[in-house]
Image 1: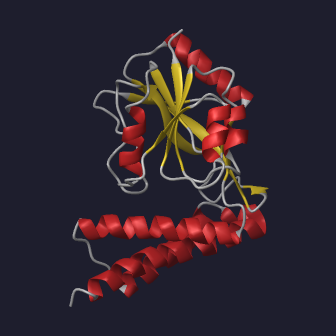
Image 2: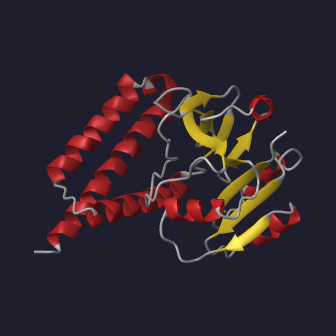
Length: 254
């Protein structure tokens, strides 16, 4: 059967890393971890699981960091995970079946379900959240994007959805959400600014309002109860902030 590597990019993930690696330690051929400057117990945990651990603090964005991590992969296939994710038994079997088939020109998407503030989300556009995470190492790689990076799908390739669930234990509390959201918003504004894009506060407001209604009504966030309402509000806020950040940067140029 073809060999399989798990690849991860991390920073200060001691809270989640052990639980994540517990779900892959017994059935993958190698674990590649690229760290961007952890100051907690992350390196020790990685060493405990026998991971090949590399430190690269010259941060150039999520896409570039994933490209760098892939250069260390020596297996036939690479499976990307974040520290706050867990592979379920059903998904594990699905991945192993795929390796046995070894289909050509195929990339695989994993169905992800997120827990937010202690509750699993079944609607709001968050489930099933198919994320492309598995492919032959020599077939493709991640884009250069600073944030919201994605796997490049080569011409003539198909994307196959796997069975099972990738559990995602995301935002632990509101403080965690706000910090993470602020970092993503900054990276988004950085990327847009580099491309010469502009924004207005009116534009920010329209996008924020549209985000709320899309998540809460069109994507049935209302069925997620109070958590669905809170998620829609927070997502609208994050949307407004990233456009507002870009608008502020534009003002400084005049």
